[in-house]
Amino acid sequence: MRPRAVVTGAAGTVGSRVCDRLAAAGWGVRGLVRSPALPGAPVELVQADLGDADALRVACRGADVVVHCAAALSSDRRMCRETNVEGTRHLLAALGASRRARFVFVSSVSVYDVRHGWSVDEQSPQWSDDVYPYGRSKVEAEELVRSDDHGLAWVVLRPVPVLSMHRSSFWGPLALERARRSAQPQFASRTMPFVHVDNLADAALLAATHPRAVGGVFDVVDGHGETRAYHEALAAATGRRPADPPDDAPAMRVAGTRIRSELGYSPRDRFAEFLGELARATVTPES
Image (cartoon, rainbow, N blue to C red; front, side):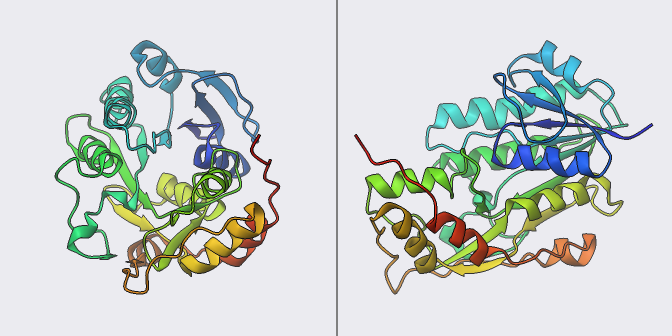
């Protein structure tokens, strides 16, 4: 029998590509979505909210791997807690003490408290207060995943900004909308760590299958681009250029060596390719 995976957020930027990648690798994939939608891969679509414990138990039954991609990327504390923390708690409870399943949690490098420095790796200090609600919610969700309470084999992935032209992409179409409305910088650092969504999907497959992945926390980064170049691509599409970070702004660096050395992650640099797609995007003028 082929292995079976459940992917939350299956209609989203990351989840849809994870579904594609797992299906292409021969997995049976069940995609969880909040409302009816059709991701690009041949998956079994299940409508289930992260707050519905009964629906989650049914959806996760028989899974070999659960890849938890669903998240709220927001500055709203309540939304972050309900989705990122409580939603993860409900999903873990739905799986119970199933030692068969591997739980891959797609977290974020936003867990790192950059007040301690903008060069980070998996051991860097994390947010311990609510100054940054999204980052703090991911810290708390990770703590749930990494606890011994649920008995699951777990893996944590911490991606940097994800490059994608999916309609819900924070750094793609949604960034174009923000740039059209505001001249504020889209990224606070002079350098922009990045991971292409297709490469992140490859990392998720490694996390789901590699024997050395279990119990590991891995930053996922392809490379570091120039924020100025990213802003130029936004300007080409919108006609409005966001302000570049000042010359004395920090240059963020994410090591990303562990996932390469331990899991064999070997991404192709697609920063220039993505910037080209972004620059050529069609932006509907504001009414």
